[in-house]
Image (cartoon, rainbow, N blue to C red; front, side, top):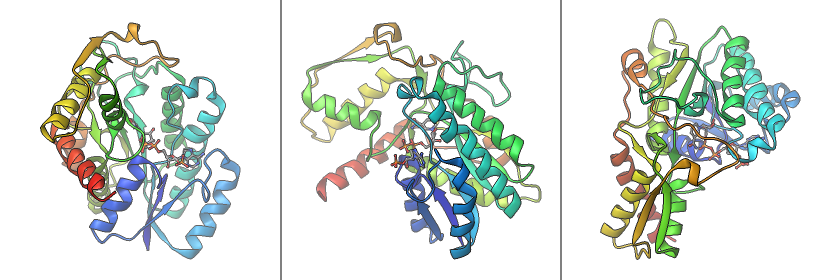
Length: 303
Ligand SMILES: NC(=O)c1ccc[n+]([C@@H]2O[C@H](COP(=O)([O-])OP(=O)(O)OC[C@H]3O[C@@H](n4cnc5c(N)ncnc54)[C@H](OP(=O)(O)O)[C@@H]3O)[C@@H](O)[C@H]2O)c1
């Protein structure tokens, strides 16, 4: 018996595997060599084969097409990975009677206004990635009347991998002046905090009389801009004696930093639902950053 985790090489997938290990929870991580979500037609056969070897108690899908800008050029591939395949996973989990956990994004919202988005607010993704993630939510809901939780999260980063935290540290070591966007606001979410909260949510949901199937917003507490996040990264790096070159971090507008995919300005997510239904709240984004730095520094020591 084990939890199946897809996308095991990604930020959230690898954090989930570590969290399971830390809690003595049996889990099997799968990469795209076993489950290629761009090939939905082969998924059911693969799932059955793997389930014959180890019986899954739940399936967590942390695999996705996550290259937001590139998705503008590869909409069909992003659709297969982010929408069609999650629908098939949901159908399979429904037939097996096991819960599916899946992740979605703040990019399902248009980004207007300043109020934190609630789950029931109307969606209007500003880019292809967001559209395909939204279609994934819809496919899951269509495919399964069973147990599923979709966590819309935001601005995920980790001590490893390719993400804003790592990019800023690299640039901060190379350049004296950096320009960072200041008009997009959201919550930077440490992958480990999200992984811990996911496992807790699964446990709580399974212990409830009626499984609380639905979409939930789940990201760190508090909010900042990318510029605010970068400034905090540099502040902590200096405190920890990392020899940064960067002396000035200039705040710019999104219009001054054009990207192929449009980003929402308001990525604030309201977390009342996850708090009231599942009793879960992630720590503030700054404490996530502290913990990420601890992990980053201990990884550096061991390199
Ligand atoms: N990162 C964020 O800021 C953010 C924000 C909101 C929501 N999310 C959502 O959170 C989830 C996990 O994100 P993440 O940050 O952990 O992403 P990530 O680090 O980019 O990892 C993505 C994972 O998906 C796998 N993958 C990509 N294409 C695949 C395919 N065709 N078949 C099977 N696996 C495939 C990757 O495998 P390879 O290593 O082989 O490429 C990797 O393991 C996604 O659903 C994402 O949409 C992320």
